[in-house]
Length: 548
Image (cartoon, rainbow, N blue to C red; front, side, top):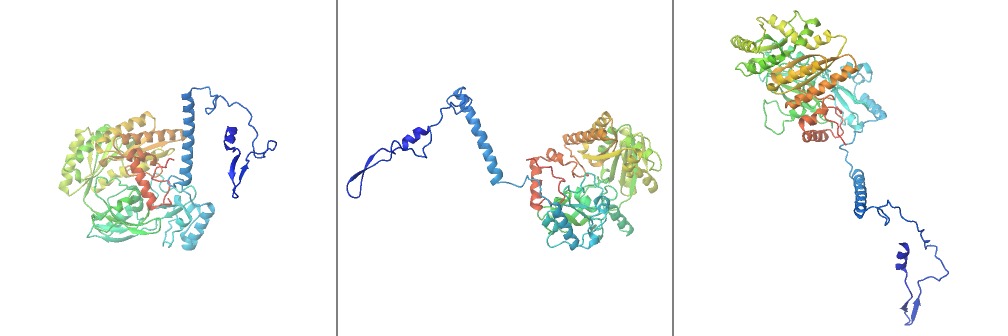
């Protein structure tokens, strides 16, 4: 091939007219005995291998030859395109976040110690998140230190959440303890609302209102010790879930860039733009740090407590639907389910005044004036009897009501006390109320088949129930994990949710795509990227891990 190419370049002698009018002959061919050092040696006559699809000796058919060449070029072009895309048009959206190195983390801590009083910044293990030092941030620097050094921030207050919300980031992070921001700043009795800081505990808040003689209360009642900041972060509700309403009116929030915003005014309703308050409810500290909240309050009404026991959990839950659909349904403040295992744990846990029959049980809180409560109680009694209730007990006095409701309050601690040699994994799901009987029945059947020790308690007024699964060792823990996985998929198949009030945290983020759809999850990520482009606020929580 090279010889043919060289032959084309040879120029034979040709006449050329000079500027003096005479004809001269120019020879471009070298003398016969002169060899140029640039002229290549004749190539060796080596036959091309038969497997080479570019060779004339290729043994395959012509179609095979073309197919192999096409595949080769396709792979080559694909690899080249990927290289160009990753090198010239690289996107950081799916890249792992780059956080502070150990030296940068130390520098950030030193700057925090210079910015704040020394007693407000702690690096000692006993005073970190697991055992709160109850530290308090007093001011915000003009340029946020975490943003400057790329140090993640994990907010913390009551430590009652159950899905790993306040666990630190592996590279090292700042634990922002909000528990001493626990002041009620303003009570507006005429408007039935108040303004408080995020470290206020909901039970302390209601006790303060009671002590002041104010006939109002905050209806959301999750686990004892939960704070307003955590309630906002997880979007939880509690046992009084049938008391419908929106109880968080507005929030004051510090954004990742240090800017302080207020989501809306104190009016009961507003149509002015996006409802930014709801953007932060359930965001689990990933979009901003709440520093103040305006809460709507409800009037305190007379309350009576009743208890009904059933032959099985299916009959118990079926009665709930009918009770809520009566004219007295709005007067039922709480409907709590405790299954037979939970009732047995209450009896053996030693935390209640008197033992109960070991049957699936419903606890009711009925609110209203005396005539309303009496009529509601009679209606409920008739309904539960129709659904197979073997016992209906109505508290005639406040002392009796406290004694009956005491069993519900001690559900978790009684389970732990009844099985002192075991550890506990608690999870929650929520489905439409009409699907709850099927969900509870199938779940109890599944847990029994798996041989798992468990108790169940539920806020059945809104289709939410909690499974408390116990285990002794890693083998049983694996069985518990598999059971939780099946429970969540069972709830999702019934148009339910993987969590009714615990939140997502690290424990349930892998279920969000199945529940919400990829498009919704992508939109959540875009909101996160816009508000917190460095992904510094509580990273690793809520959002499913991105797949490259």
